[in-house]
Length: 281
Image (cartoon, rainbow, N blue to C red; front, top):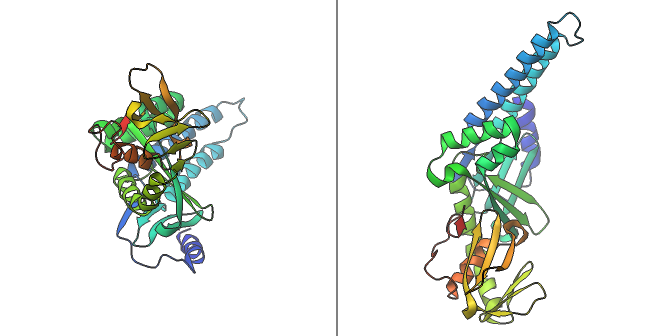
């Protein structure tokens, strides 16, 4: 299997635009892989005991097959890794290689999910993943799962999630910092002229506009933040939010929040580029 994987990787990376050695490499969490194998072992054991009944059509070989599938999936997960290079970011898995150069990043989508909620809605697998996250993380990160999707100019999409990679939170911070450095000059120039567009939101030096509604002066805004999965922009003295939308519906949402802070909206609430800077879970 490893030989076939190496061959596939060589074919996928031939002609790659990323040629420098990796500055940072992030691998799949072994805890999640072990829990996956234990899950399939449990299913295999249950299948075996069901097959032990004289009237059952389930055979012991089915139980063996379930366990083998679990082992294969765990090994496949172990082949997945994320690497950050001078030119861009690369994700390698048994399905192939995806990479996006920094200069070709069109936008990113970002959202967070409370891992405890994921466990409730994800059944046994969800609970196992939550246990893995809580075991390998600490503090606020232990109950929050971060999702970052990079989108290239050619439509290539590359995912980074904290439930998949060890120290993925650090990877997300590194990637966002690099992408923001490249996108920020253009965005600031647009804000200073006719305004920069972040999906359904337009931001200028004096006002913000949500879809086709009337623009609101920045001086009337109290703050902007990501609360749970929602991006919220609040007007001073108003109970309802001016904007309330899932954060992954807004391209480059953390860059939007950074620019709002730079323009004086909620100044002092969050002053640095960090996945948690504008997040309230």
